Image (cartoon, rainbow, N blue to C red; front, side, top):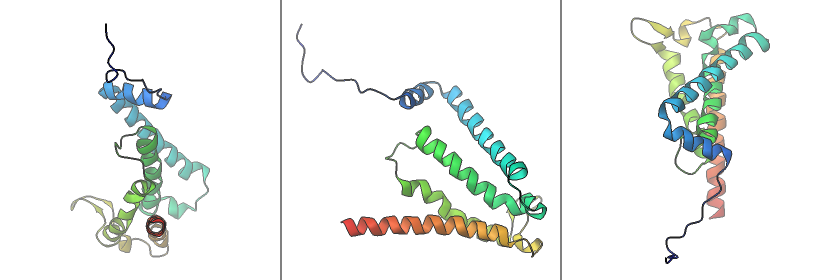
Length: 165
C-alpha cells in the first residue's frame, strides 16, 4: 500500500471553543437553544443590573429613557458572544467589524427623537421630544456617546492603517 504525500494531512489541534462550535454546527436546534438562552440571560442580567444593583435616579429607570443604554449594552455583550465566543461571523475577526453596529446609533437616534419607535397604532417608545424635557438629555447623550466612541475608534484605526502603508 502506497502513501501519497498529497493525501497525508495533519490534523489541526482544535481548542475547546472550536470543538464546541463544530458540535453546535452539527446540531442546529441545540445551537439555536444555546444562543437563545445566552441572549435571554444577557438581557435579564442587564435588566437586573440597571434596575437593582446600579443606583439610578427613579425618573431615568423608565424604559423610555433607558432604552438606548439597554440596547447598546445588550449589543456589546451579544456581539461579543456571537463574534468571539460563538464565531458566527465566518470572516476574519476585526475590531472594526465589531464596532460597525454602533454606527447605526445616529439613525436610530434621529428616528427615536422625531417619530418614536413602534407601529402607527402602538408606540413602543414615543418620540423623545414628547417626553419630559428635563430627562431627555440622558438618552440623547447615550446615543451620541456610543456613536462617537465607535466612529472615532474606526477613524483612528483607518488612520493607523494608512500611516503603516
